[in-house]
Length: 99
Image (cartoon, rainbow, N blue to C red):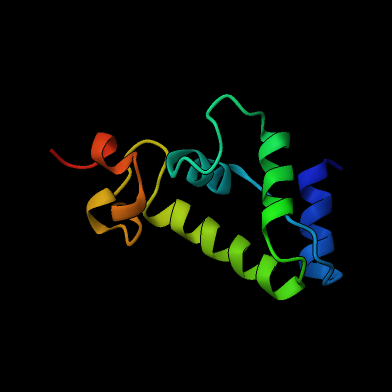
């Protein structure tokens, strides 16, 4: 079992304040310039752990909302910046959004 799987089990099955960071949350953090693009996934995970309130409710809500946003709007190949509620705050929207 990897670190991500263990964090998911801690968060959703044991209701512990773990902070699982998968590809969608990693992509959001990079596109919003919350973290430098050259950071490793492990460093991005540590950053999320440091800046997210250490409560189960906050971390579960952020994880679910971030995954949903990454799957439906801020997709890897064809982001839908024109429908994104974060577009005004996102430096990547000008580069990735419609012309």
